[in-house]
Length: 215
Ligand code: PRP
Image 1 (cartoon, helix red, strand yellow):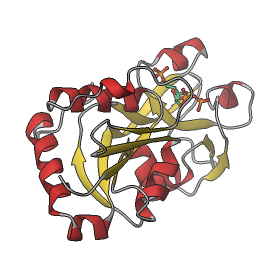
Image 2 (cartoon, rainbow, N blue to C red):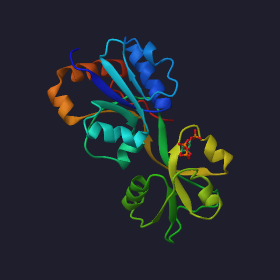
Image 3 (cartoon, protein in one colour):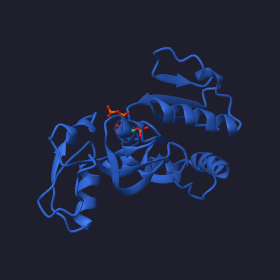
Image 4 (cartoon, helix red, strand yellow):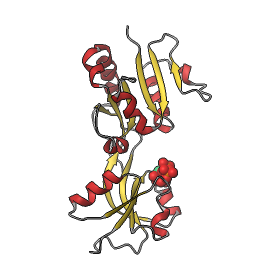
């Protein structure tokens, strides 16, 4: 490999799962074992450089060509859909978008609902497709408390284990869609660097191209 490849990773679980995947693909990832508070890592042979960033910023680094590829959840791609190519479903980081609320919530109620969410695009699209005009209340986190406190009638949020819903007395009323980690790439990098495509093919051979369902 002649060109250095820069890979933007979503800090946290996706980063760890990606490092495990690359190990499985035969890459020596020991240079990332002792991370400390560093946010940029270069492999000893200089072939790879990893950036650890917040999820939405993965799309920004890839869109601007600072990173050639990135790994980020589909939830973030739905909210930030432009300026990159979505190449692979990595089949980890599995979870789903749901509509959840307190048990007394009535999804068939005809009054205009207030929906609290960190994902306004997902929420609006979902209710629009159902022909429902809802009021979206944007929340930055801890969305689960909003129906309990009367800020919203229901939430649109990610469910992984379901523990946060249970702990806050909420139940799932509707499943919206499956979410998983995706490999995205810069358009120009894909066009100009054949080694990048070879790398992606290698990863694809490991993850396969069959979608693992979220139960
Ligand atoms: C996410 C999501 C839920 C929780 C779901 O929040 O928004 O709150 O994880 O996980 P669970 O089903 O396994 O309980 P995050 O951890 O990103 O925190 P936040 O609410 O502060 O954004």
